[in-house]
Image (cartoon, rainbow, N blue to C red; front, top):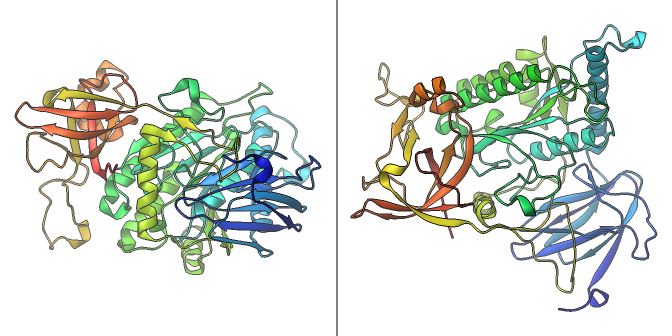
Length: 498
């Protein structure tokens, strides 16, 4: 491999409030360093709200599409050749920054009230609530990017905030696997390096190789890419996450340690799927999911990203009780097609079991980036059919309730846990991704286990790689060597692909 001196390096000089945008092909990578090679730093840069350390290379790969923004202007040096790259002077960062500062004022007031501190006279008539934010918008509008920016700005304020980030988009997978939704506290800025980890990296089965900013999310298994597949199940999981957040707030009513400001005052940001704004599902189901989210999380601010009709709709429905704000969509948002999303899902699943390594551009011998390289060694084990209790929520193929004939009732309800028999030829288990559910916390919970499978969070994921019908055995790929005998698993519609 060539030395760093022979690498094809390029410099871009960015003016204040501009951003360098790039898109990568599947087998390419890009190394970016903010600051001049001789160590003389010129300005600062950030990627989706996470500041890039000066003169430190950051690697991007696996079809990453991102932007390097600067408030004051800076020089960036890069190695590699994106399929698309350009500098834009038109960005939504100023209005996004204004939204952030509004939320910061809410956090400070909320913390002052919690601690009984004096409040300026001009602020005494304002409600002292932390920001509880719902971000909605159509597909390819940049919702997740906005959530990352607002979260990263909060943790960068130097106040010790640890806002909760909620991911309700099952197609995104968040910090677990595609089909999962959940919540995690964020203590350090979320990095961007690959679309396989859009919201940062979760702690996995390799504690000795974890990133220093690995997240500890609480995840629930929905199991499908689209909310219209089972909206009642989606609604129930949303309420479960809301109840969990409520319990955490009650357990941490006040934080007096300087290193840990009030947990409640940091607030949270809720990222949503595009089906909350538009889509092929019924409008009634969409409105029901929005209302369920507002109720479950006690939302006090709704951000509508680049959708005038939805903004008017939500203003009419909730404007009298909730602040509804329309924010601009970035011109750098890329239209993502179905095949791209399928490749991302495959990368996410592969990263969960095998870790993630982004090869640097040719000639780069060493580089570090926001999410450390992590190589995992999953294990394969053989289980008896009876060693694992497997369920499917609802029927395997289920039409929306609105599509049923008038007066018709379902044989299997949308939230019914249906046992799956591995010996059945139509079980659908081969190459299926299974969510291993957490065990009930008390004996009383165990007695109600079958009825409350939907309310149990996920402790991990496995894949069924082989089924031996004659011997009633199946081979399981797991991220670690821990036994799952006697556990309960739920199957969705995602499959493992090598």
